[in-house]
Length: 104
Image 1 (cartoon, rainbow, N blue to C red):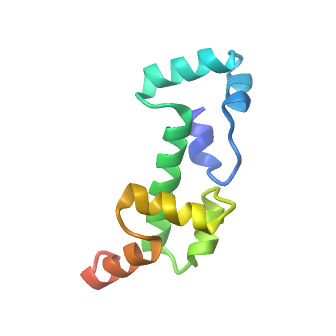
Image 2: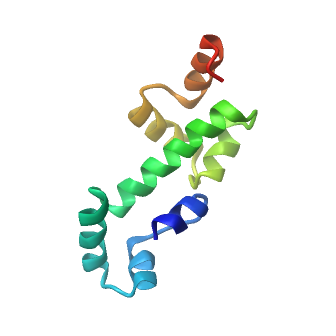
């Protein structure tokens, strides 16, 4: 399941869908996933999406809107607010800071 998340970040994943794929009840799947990874499937997926967004912001010239869609967010506003909550900067500020410090 983790590999599927990595390979398909732009896809919609629900706990029900993941549990069905793993042939478990939703609650059993969430419990097992948390025991294995330390976090719920939703938090794990959110972290993967933000990590990939960080990579794309530094490695490409894609717009923030394009990146948000590629990593599975339908709304740029939701993507930007979740990115800022996790990283501490907006996606644009993150890119600008990296470019000005020479890490991009």
